[in-house]
Length: 227
Image (cartoon, rainbow, N blue to C red; front, side):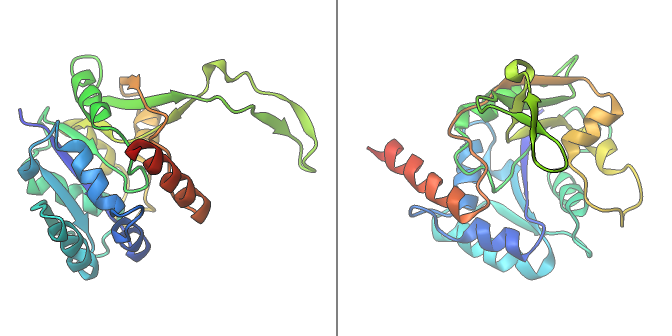
């Protein structure tokens, strides 16, 4: 079955950060382009609440991308956005269609990560995530901030995006609890549900970008890639 990719943008801050150019290109554009080698463009969908769709669509059309931008029904929570994306691409609840969930906060995730995640989905792995070894020294502290010890980082990994799910697994994860429940992380939900989770190698460039300091680091990485 043809894989698909969903980029949920849950609120105004999400859309503003996704569409504001960083080093000459919007994070949303970078994220969409990063999966196009593994997923056909007509199988990629950006899902937003009603008031934000025009901004996301304009951002993509400006660079010639015809990626679908769809509107999720109110209240437009993350699970509503993902559900709308699944329905748009026709990924039914019993389907084994491979679904990539993308995040605008990871704009430099290389295209080969998407391909590796998709390749890892199948028997024995309903969920696949890219991992990167933790190289920073991690300490435990008490309530006053005094250092108690050093955490063994040999077993620690940072989880990146995009993350892969079979459609049936993703449907189950976003259907747990009431529709008005607070948004949850699908990977955390998969761990709690005891689903079979596979892993693939992540990439050092796939940093999470949220703060101004993160944006400066993103600029620096892009400058190095362009040299």
